[in-house]
Length: 323
Image (cartoon, rainbow, N blue to C red; front, side, top):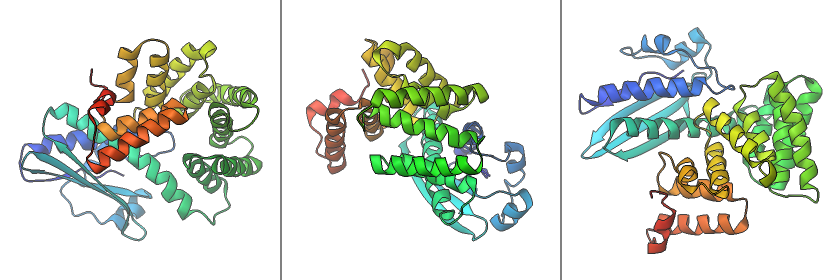
């Protein structure tokens, strides 16, 4: 449940806070693994000192997101807390700061970043919370958490969790997509001696998953990853774009469609996908993530380090993707 964001300071940011609350609710509602309480229900608690434990019990929600916005000089600061109603303690906190400017642009940036971070953090939170739970859903959460921890060993663990989930529930779609994602990652990153075989297996599994549910952003993305070869690049681009349509806050989908368009000789169309509404570090992370090469990842990491240390070089500006 996303409670209406509170505001401090200027009265004019009230409308901005409402836009962030509404757009974030809308965006997360489009993520299949999330069940988000409607905006109308959440608005009923706008002027109340809501007790999260009572909300959790009354509305059967696992987490409550509280947020606030304030203006300090020319900076807009957004603070959020993801609270577990069972303990009344924050499971995660986040902060975003932006220069004041185009209000619609600021809202898009804030909502996209919050949605992206919440999706990532909740996978890890749920995986840890249910680490001793042997049921199917717990195994799937642990599988997706392992998939986010890049590396062959982690991917093998993910395959094991998804396989165990399918052994309990052979028709579980999320576990099926997880197995397809495993093969797509192994094939795309060439992590064993038969990458094409893994790509073919991923395509078989994920085509079936999309027949069962064509509205899965993850299935569209990983099928795109499996078909992300020169001969089938147009279809991969179509699948990546479909994944973004279904889940606009899916950063890897943005990165891969951008990189694929650059590869096809359309940099002007592709680069905005790599860096839309993102600051410099996020653009570079997307570049390194989508490059599928040691050189690209190394280049991105070195520029990120210089950015963090405040020692950017003139040539680093070539990767701002603003031209």
